[in-house]
Each structure stands twice: as C-alpha cells, then as structure tokens.
Amino acid sequence: MDDLFPPFEPDANEPRPRRFKPVPFRMIAPNMITLMALCLGLTAIRLAFEGKFEPAVIAIIAAAVLDGIDGRVARLLKGTSRFGAELDSLADFVNFGCAPALILYGFALHNLKSLGWIVALIFAIAMALRLARFNAMLDDPNRPEWKKDYFVGMPAPAGAMTAMLPLYLHFLGFGFEAWAAPAILVYVLGIALLVVSTVPTFSGKTMGKRVPRGLVLPIFLTGVAAFGLLISFPFESLVAISAAYIVGLPLGAAQYRRRSRLEPQTRPESGEDPASAI
Image (cartoon, rainbow, N blue to C red; front, side, top):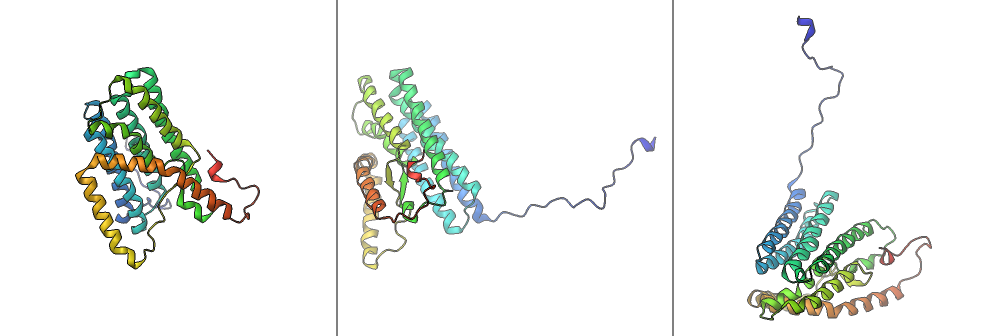
C-alpha cells in the first residue's frame, strides 16, 4: 500500500521558486495617492445618490487636487511606472467621467428623463476617449518637445470641474428649476465635445521649472491670497476659475498655432501629428 502514495520529493534539478524583489516605497506612495483620489470619486457617487450634492462636489474637487499631486510626487521620488500610469487613467475615468456625470444627472438632467441620461453617458464616454487618446499620444516618438506644454482637448480634471459650474451657481443661491434642465444639458454636452476635441489647451505641466528670483515673493503672496479666497469663498472662486478657464481656451489655441507655425518642417512625411489624431 505504501507504493500507492509515494512521498513527494522535489527534483533537485528543478529551478528554485521565484522570489519577487521587494518594491521600494517610492513606487508605492504615488499609487496610494491615486487610490485615495479614487476613493473620493466613488464617495462622491454615493453622496450624489443620497442627494448630498455639495459634499459630492467637494469630493470631486479634492480628487482633482490629489490627481495633480500624484504625478508630481512620482516624478519627485523617481517612482513613475507603467502600472501607476494605467491606474491613474482608470481613476481619472471614475473621478472625472462617471462621478460628475452621475452628479449632474441626479442634480438636473434626470428632469429630461432618457435624453438627460444620454447626455450623461456622452460626457462619461467622452472622458474615457480623451484619456485613451492621451495614453496613446505618450508613446508618439515624433512629438516635438514644445507640444508637451499643451493638451489635445480639455483635460479630464478641468472638464469635470467646469461641467459642474451649474452646481456652483446653485450653491450660491441661483435657483435651477425644471425649466433650466435643457440649458444645463446643452452646457454639459458642450463640455463633453471640448473634452474629445482637438482644440489645444495649455497644460502648465512645464511651468515653474525656473522662476526668476524677483518673482518668488510675489508668487508666494499670490498663492496665499488665492488659497484664502478659495477657503473663504469656495464656490464664488470656483465659478470665477471655471469661467476664466473657458474664456481662456481661445488664447491657448492661438498660442499653439503661433508656435506651430514657427516649428521647422523637419518631421518625416509618414509621421502623423498627434493633435490631429483621435
């Protein structure tokens, strides 16, 4: 009977089990920030279902702040990775695509029934397409260095924050009855089209690498004043920021075209301009 169940003896010639190397904390920290932002986006959806639109909007804004931090922390700690980039894109789709669409639907678009839901879907899908295009353009070897100063289309956080402009106005006392739902629908649809458009928008990612010494103190004072206004008058400040951003879009596009005309035509004919890609 002992021959039926012989003891297992591993072959001495088999390779030893693979041992995974420990992951340094500098690779984990940026992803933890991204996950915290994702938690805020999911919490915003829950708050919207409960009719608590003000804390839901604040959660989205906090997620946008963390989204602006995680990439910079990764570059500072030299902890960038492909995993982190993919996780950031998935979190952005939830935080700035799904969550604002559901918040806007619960706030006003539900008054238009199926038409309002279709526009909410368009906004969320537009954000997914915009993020997919952004990831694809990162691998373009023919992209000039100066084009890193610009996004193609409205970036995801800006699209989400400007789309919620009707909510900011509502929190300030502007009444939005059922009759205002068509106007909100047209506005949200316009933001969705800007998100997937090829309109170049200024990114600001390369700003501030070298600041003149004489501007250091004015920048400190301006930052403190802006932070104080945002804390003291949050929704008034968000209305002003959203309106200024939308008004400034043509200025960024004009600057992009001006710099594009100055670019020497040295790129290969087979190369496609990422700004014209979808």
